[in-house]
Length: 315
Image (cartoon, rainbow, N blue to C red; front, side, top):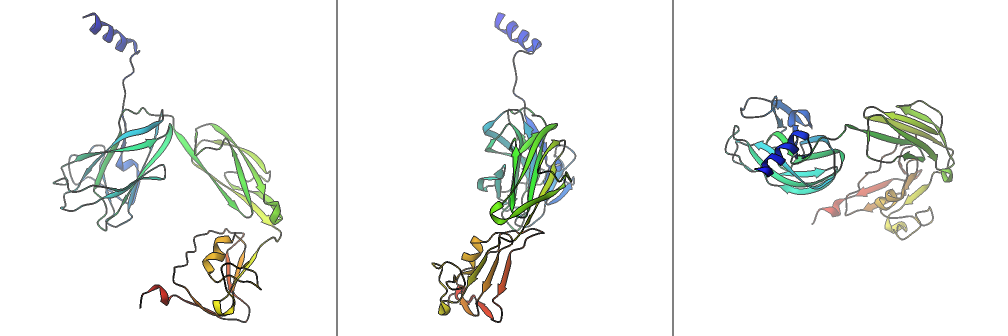
C-alpha cells in the first residue's frame, strides 16, 4: 500500500517520467501520390495512396528530444491486393533496409503495423520509404516512434557553390534550431585564380563572411569567378595512342572518356581526337556544373570521333 501511495505521489508531482510516442501522419509527409479517405479505419484526416510505380516514395520528417540509436518505429499500412509491395527504407539519407517486406493485409480496411529498428538522432530526422515494385507500395497511414518525446523544431540550411571555391559553416551541422546564428565564410580556390563575387538567396551581401539567423529552411549560394585556371584533357582511340595510363595530355591522351570525366572539375574541357572508340561500359555523366562553369566535352578541332558501344551487347 505504501509503495502504491509513493507511486501515485510521484506521478502527481511529475517526478516519474513516462515514455511517450511521436506519431507522424502520412498525410503530413512529403510523397509521390495523393491523400485518400475512401477506405475506413485510418487515423488522422486520411491516408496516402502512393503512386503505382517503382521509385515512388513517402518521406516523413519529425524531431525528437534524444538520440535513439535503435529506435522502434511502427508503420501502419494496408494492402487489399494479393501481392507483395516491398519497400526500401532510409533513415536520414542512409540505407537501413534494402527490402522491407510488405505483403497483403487482407483488405484495404484491414490496417496492420510492422516494426523496424532505425538509428535516430536528437533533433530533426527523416525516414524515407521507396517502392521497389511497379505497383508502388501499400497505403500508408502513419508511423510511430515508440518511446520518443518531441524535440524542438529544426530547419535545414542548404549552401550551394557556383564557381571555384567552398563555404565553411560554423557551427557545421545538418539542421539548426529556430533562432540559431550561423556564420558562413566563402573561400575562393586561389589555385584556380578564383575570387569571391557575392551571395544570392538568403543574402545578397558582397562580404565573404556573413551571419545568418535561421528561422525556416534556408538556401544560399556563394558565387566565385575564376580568372582562367581551367584544365584541358584529351582522349584518343587506342589506334592513335589512347591509354588510360597516360597523362591525358595532347601528346599522351587517355582512351576512356569516363577516366577523363572522373578527373574533371566544373569549367574543365575534354577533347576527343578523331576515330572510333570501342567502349564496353556505359559512360555516366554524373558531375554537375553551375551557371558560371560548365563541363565541356568537344571533338578535337577538325576531327570526328565516333563512340561505338556495340561491345556492351554480347554477340
